Length: 187
Image 1 (spheres, rainbow, N blue to C red):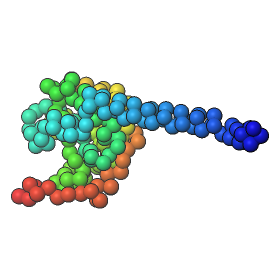
Image 2 (spheres, helix red, strand yellow):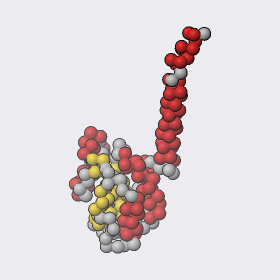
Image 3 (cartoon, rainbow, N blue to C red):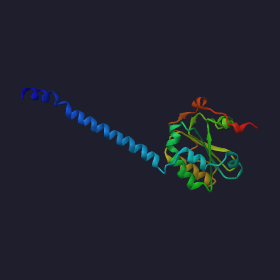
Image 4 (cartoon, rainbow, N blue to C red):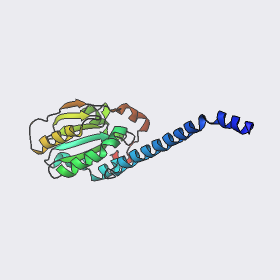
C-alpha cells in the first residue's frame, strides 16, 4: 500500500493541471473555430464575391456615376476582412455609385497604381461623376468612413468627409512577388 500512496502523492499535483490545460486547449480551439466561422459566415462574402459583383473600370468611368475603386489583393488580410462590409455598402448604393475592384497583382493596373498613389491596400479611391478623385481611404478603418464617403458621392456632393484617412494596411509593394501579367492586356 505504501508504494501506491507514494505514486499517487507524486502524481497528484500534476493531474488537475493537465486537466486544466486540456480544457484550456479545447476552449481555445473552439474559440478559434467560432472566430473562423463568424468571419466566414458574415454573409459568407469573400473577395471573389466582391470582384464578381464589381463593374469593369472602363465602364465605371464612362457611365456618368461616381465610382469607388478598391485596389486589393487576394493575399491582403485587411482586404479579406473588410469584404463583407464593402459588399453590404455596395448592395446599398449600387444604383447610384459604381464599385470597381482592381487587383494589384495584375500588371495591367500599374498605371492606375501610380495615378492614385497606391502604397497600401486596401486602397479605396472615391471618384466623382467625371472620374476626378475626391479622396481616398486606406487600410482598416471604421466602416462608417466608407459609408459616409459613399453616401456623399451618391448625393453628388463636391467633397467627401474622409478624404485622406489611413488605417492599418498591407504594403502594396508585396505585389512584386505575386504579380502576374494579364494575358489579355496585350493590345
